[in-house]
Image 1 (cartoon, rainbow, N blue to C red):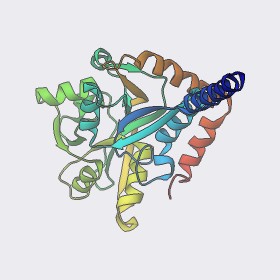
Image 2: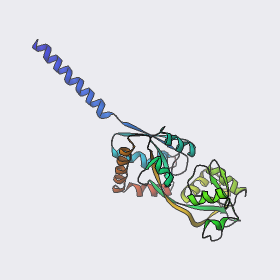
Image 3: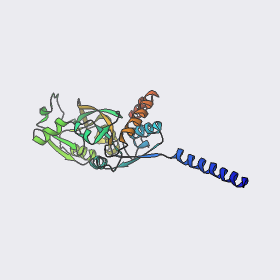
Image 4: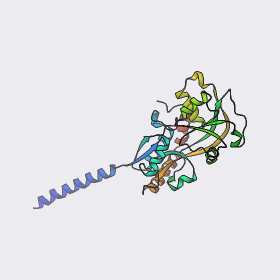
Length: 261
């Protein structure tokens, strides 16, 4: 009888140990909807781009998290996360109307958005957006830009044509179907180098005055009850990356094209 109890105890210990091991190895999968915006985020880049790299590594430092990115058109990525189909969406500039549906993380990037133009059709110094009322401006559907930009477009005080992707707007710019196209400097020249022949890229220039200098955030859907804890953990992970000096290093890597496969 004693032997039976000993065997039973041993089996209990083994089962508890196995159970503990499985629990300790369990990971929380964080589903993130994002879009193509090279070199910040792209399925074709190492680590899926700078921002995706930062997000993935921040969560690794935050705990037992595994990140999965789903690349979608930007508007669909946003709306899907808003409905709660994903835990978060990456990455977005600040807009007050989004705070109702999302919790903003610590910034994961920053960039100046400027107006690109053909060198043969230069943009002179401008001070306010209405100074551009005589120009046709391309814009990509789903992008933030600024509230003033979209308000002026809706009121007809700015002539804005939309397209579904940035490369389509650059094609329109090359064809002189639009006069200006606002895009981040890093992403803009990255896209030109990736998608267009170098024999025509030299035709493009930009006005140095930024439309906006903004920081991009990971937005966590309020539809998920665990979002507040996810944000806290993620922000801790970002802080750890900063203390390790990795954010500055990866930014330097970004500028020299190290994220290309």
